[in-house]
Length: 283
Ligand code: NAD
Image 1 (spheres, rainbow, N blue to C red):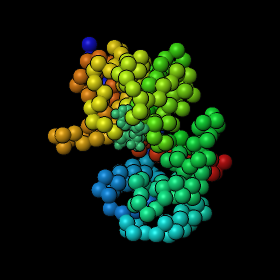
Image 2 (cartoon, rainbow, N blue to C red):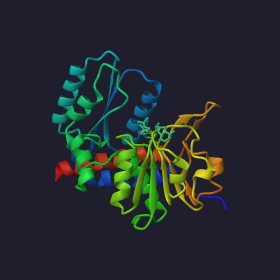
Image 3 (tube, rainbow, N blue to C red):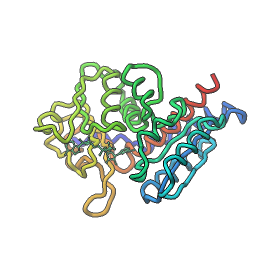
């Protein structure tokens, strides 16, 4: 039996449609606004920024894309952020990562007003997630949770979840969201021995290592739900995830494809966070 495919593209489209209606209901005086800042000319980042701005416009939100040269001084970037923090028409601010080496990503993230931090990376939002308090959650893990919910998995009590990857933007917040949904969570990373032994225990396996095809069929428990966050270029030059899709779909109960899985959900959650931030600012 082959696994159910969780179609992130279709799910994201539904969510965007709902957001469009909610934005329309807010009316012209309360249009949510998102500012996306890109420093430098990394080709992948340029594509991401274009997608984010377009997605924003499609749901009727206002968007500003600031594109700066790679040699922008950190102090100048901080000044731009200060202006956006004080702009009442802007409810969400996102600085596309990675930043050039001379700019501290930490100082930049810290300079975004927490209530406008739609990426959910600010320490105030990270702390809120850790403490189970309201706040803006990182988009990619949030999208993964929505994908689980789409197949009826909301309360994960009694289930074992394994996350491969411990980054601040994916692995750690992913683990905390799974924990908040009552899963029994294990985090694996590059220093984890016997990875397959751990992953084979997972009812829910989230791969976020950035290693093309590293999750093979024999690392997956039969019937498990496998969420593939990875975005890699395979040897053939094509986009692929961290999961060996062809092999794992023969073992798993449900699986997300790459492309068309977590990626589109991340953008949908960015819109959801921007709407959320706009509503909170109006409350
Ligand atoms: P990262 O490089 O910051 O973190 C990777 C993590 O994986 C690290 O914690 C590392 O310890 C772990 N890891 C690496 N190799 C491993 C191995 N062989 N075994 C076990 N653990 C290993 O990356 P990130 O920013 O967390 O992103 C992870 C992947 O997700 C990348 O492919 C990235 O492109 C992708 N990504 C996708 C989206 C999306 O919207 N789909 C969003 C963000 C990141």
